Image 1 (cartoon, rainbow, N blue to C red):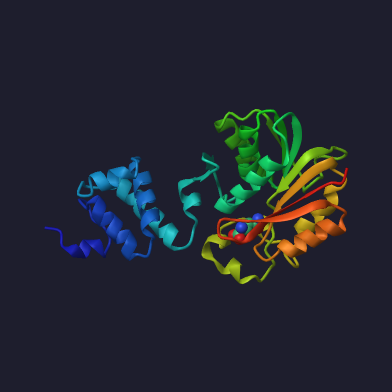
Image 2 (cartoon, helix red, strand yellow; image 1 turned 90 degrees about the horizontal axis):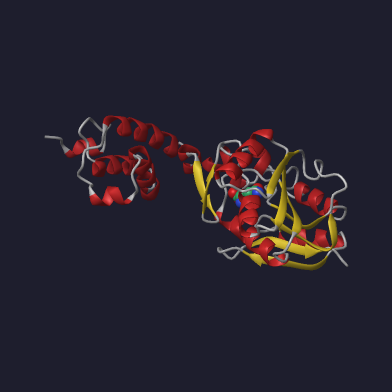
Length: 287
Ligand code: GLN
């Protein structure tokens, strides 16, 4: 008979699902992550783990699960291990070439939807990464034409793949830094979740962030350079009355608002995320 020691040491052939989960937790993997990874390894819904905790884990699923738990406890984001993350109720493919979409970025989508009427409009998403924001907007507003840029061709490939999977046709992806791929074009709405962390910020010590593309997270030297470039460039790429919405760090609201006012924008306003942190600041180009 298996002793309970198999819960603590390497799972053996014949281990049950409950024992596999217990082993993962003892190794320091959060319960929900362990459940999601075991369900993924078994290619069953998570409810299966509750329905049949005493069923034996097949060898192939056990091997996959153990390798994944190993990666997870070393800090790799769950989304890179499973290759997907939900954003705005859609499943997106993600790779280490793109930032893992964050729940707080849904606030950027909400503000963008509120800032521009649902009729035909040209919309620009700068630094699209996985395409999370651009695709959410494209799906919510079929009449909008979204242009999404990114300096990373690898990220654009991920975004374009997501557009295909979600059957999004009103979004184009173009390669280049910020406004570089759209010279002379003007938009009704510009959105961006740019890199905004300063080098040396203690937040970067988080093991999850160390697995993400630094170019999507860090903006030297002060965390505000990308935001500044986007704000300055927006003057030449918005129509009169057009709107700009930017995600930023939880202590950057006043600095972003000040840059917008100094650049001549009106209707400058910051919005708090679900954690209560100012996370998105918006503004309008004067008429
Ligand atoms: N919100 C992310 C974080 O703090 C950073 C994303 C970004 O820099 N755009 O982990």
